[in-house]
Image 1 (cartoon, rainbow, N blue to C red):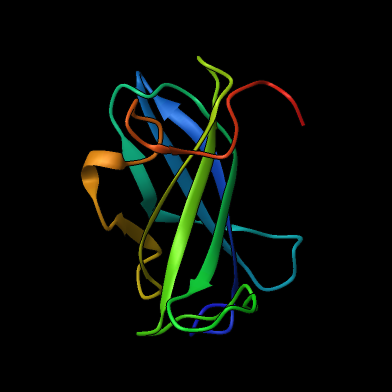
Image 2: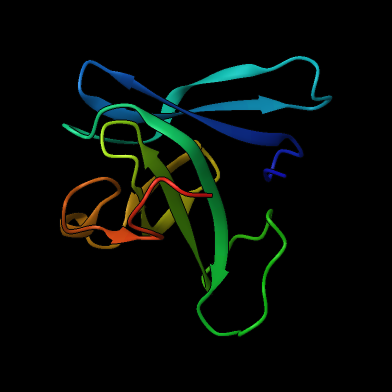
Length: 124
């Protein structure tokens, strides 16, 4: 949940060749409000599919509830690239107030050739 008590979801898409992650808020999972901001975007990565977004602790070894945020938390954005069928991810900082995220290191951002990968094939 957000600090405003709403649930937030993200959906991958694209604008021209820029991969994007749209953000929607809901209180009932029946009606959704699209935010004016994007969670994130990366030029020249094409369509983003199956976007995952979750917190990881900077200090603990155990997993976190999906709504956790704070100074000891980083967030991962993962997206499957439609063009290459490869899952890329990056670690960064999430801003609950406006639903945006920025990578810690833009040189290994989501979907670019130097980014981190979950796998190297189109297998589930």
